[in-house]
Amino acid sequence: MNFTKRLIGIFLLGCAFLSAGAVGTDTLKVAFPQDTVGLHTVGAEADSLAADKQVKKNIWKKISDYFAKSNHYDRSKKIDFGIIGGPSFSSATGLGIGLVASGLYSFDKADTTLQLSNISLFGNVSTTGMLVVGVRGNNFLPKDRFHFDYSLYVLSLPSNFWGVGYEAGNNDENKTDYSRLKFEFKPKFLFRVFENMYVGPAINLQYVKASKMTEQALALLGGNPDLEFWAYGAGLSLTYDSRDIITNATRGHFLQLEQFFYPTQLGNEHRFYMTDLTYATYHKAWKGAVIAGEFHSMLNFKDVPWPLLAAVGSPNRMRGYYEGRYRDKSIVEMQIELRQHIWKRNGAVLWVGAANVFPEFRDMRLKKTLLNAGVGYRWAFKQGVNVRFDVGFSKNGLGFAFNINEAF
Image 1 (cartoon, rainbow, N blue to C red):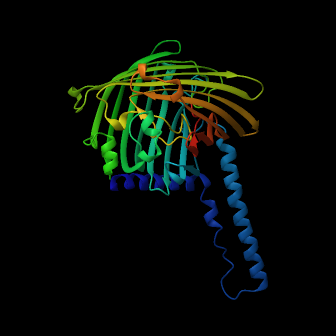
Image 2 (cartoon, one colour; image 1 turned 135 degrees about the vertical axis):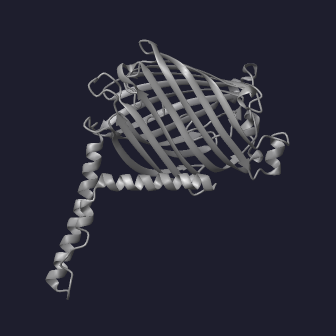
Image 3 (cartoon, helix red, strand yellow; image 1 turned 60 degrees about the vertical axis):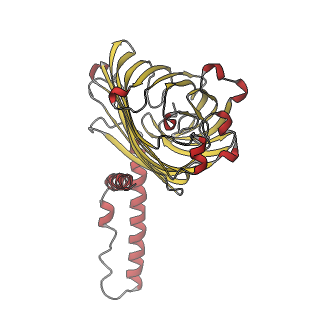
């Protein structure tokens, strides 16, 4: 816990420093009028009020200018960076405050056809005691011959547990508490084999610790589950990507197949495998509208530890569901989203989705399909980077989320 708090502190301190730098320091120079020495007179008070108004005006102007400039990529900078914060709420995390930072840059500024590389840093603190900090990014190297993608985060969260399987998650009486600490690092390096097709190695490193498990939770897991472990995975990623903008696509297709192996030879206590398949497609409809669709499946085989089982609910899929209430070895899920530009930097989305968790394909049942729908607001923070506020409706309630970049 101390390790996580230190990371949160460093993250917030850095963001505060960057935010101050973005707004500027000129404001501080006028914050203390120099004509307040001696007795106050009516004229001095008037001058002081005028100075205060000017300070406030300067602050709001700087903030306004900052956000106005943030929507345009500045090629003169090594990295065009910006920060914004906002609220969040879900049944899993309670009321929270999130801070996200986005940076755009290019490995070859002379090549205007090369997609901009991006980095996103995020942090969130909530009333339930949740703490999370992380970073993710996509790098497009010169001539688009190589891609380097990565994600890294640390999460500490008082959580709920219902057991494994659809029936367990569907039973309200199964609900019990525990605390979860998780670290995950997932980098991959891809080589272009032909236009829009990439292949390369990937690594997945995870640390999980479950604590404060109740007797009921232990019983749901069979009495003697793994409560702390490292998972070391290595595999291969095959990707076809013809999207125009990776963070906010308006056209193109994305197909990704990842196969990870977690053998005992790498230090794992349990041997298991994971196959992850994603297909997404994007099409322009009428003026300012994009219709996006995504299909995703995650299949686990052999002796996969229970915290790494496929779970319904995340900031990007089945938004509004309590993450992990429904979990099992495998999941199949899909969503369709209508994205509509409304005015200037403002937009809105509507989506519907569905998911099914199961231990084996032969156990899939249509009646166990979980449905999802939602609405969201979009604000163009930077070129191709949207800040999003989503409200997702689920079988068990609703949830609010604040995040950066489109869900898929």
